[in-house]
Image (cartoon, rainbow, N blue to C red; front, side, top):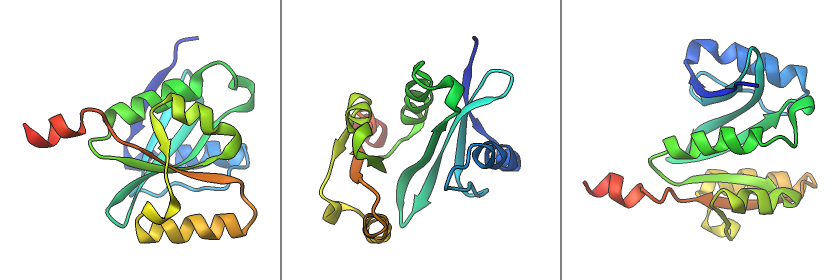
Amino acid sequence: MEVVAQLLPAIQTPLVNKFYQAHKARGKATRQDQSWVLKATDIVAACRVQHVSGAYFLSTVLVAPEYRGKGFARRLLTAVLASQPRSLYTFAYCHLSAFYQGLGFTVIDPVALPQELAEKYHCYVAQGRQILAMQYINPDQNRLCCE
């Protein structure tokens, strides 16, 4: 199956939300988010990058159930990570830690998070979510900022 990763224009945000709603995802994209999708004919995976307190935050990574275990999340996130000029934070479920580490994320102490993200993190943990604070630093970040 031919799939393409792409950043959707803000006007297409409702398409991502329709995908999230169909698969009962917790998050909802806004027009201010970067909404990324992996598409064949339809969306098979999506995620969003939010700008929170001057930081970039990866959230709502979702692959449609029938496409899981086929490398689609890796393909989508590889495209997303390659496009980010700065570091990116995420909260990964503990059972997905190795997956995210394989993409270049590292586990960080939640105290290292920007304040608004730290507040979100502690709220999610208080709700019983088994998550880790993680950070991806683009290996080209120094090159991009110093040229």
